Image 1: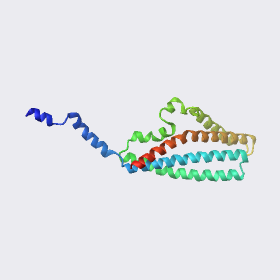
Image 2: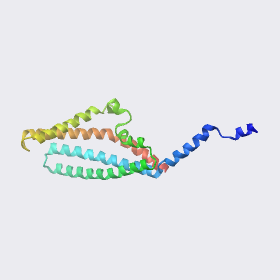
Image 3: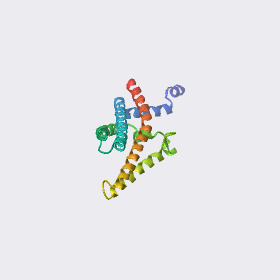
Image 4: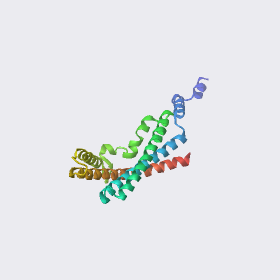
Length: 204
């Protein structure tokens, strides 16, 4: 009798694992919300990519055709449109990611999502964002060029002075290089994220 009772009792490890699994399943975010959040994130990163590309085109048009040229005006208008679209998508992205956290998503994983998506796991610690193409030093140098350009323009005695023109040239060049480097880093990661989101959408 005692042997039968012992045989009928479930193993202790399985008995403890079952409630834990039930709690994990209950805490998971809805599948549809997760797919929607991933789709919004892809749109957000895509808009950011287009915004950087149009900014690079605007900087190039200013240097090649002149600050007051028609090409520079069109490029600036396109840049402002994409920037506004990016700002709008930013609100939806923050809302979707916040809902995922509140409805049971893993907070640490969601917080690391964007940084891992843009930089890639472990690449920041190695100093290479996209090995063979772009490094963290490239981003730093382009960013410092923008800072130097802004300082020169700010401290210039007159708007059309030699110092101001040099500042505009350095700032525009730094901004152009930064945007190009950003596009090189983000574009492959965006393709990977789009494939992952499309696979989740097919499974849903």
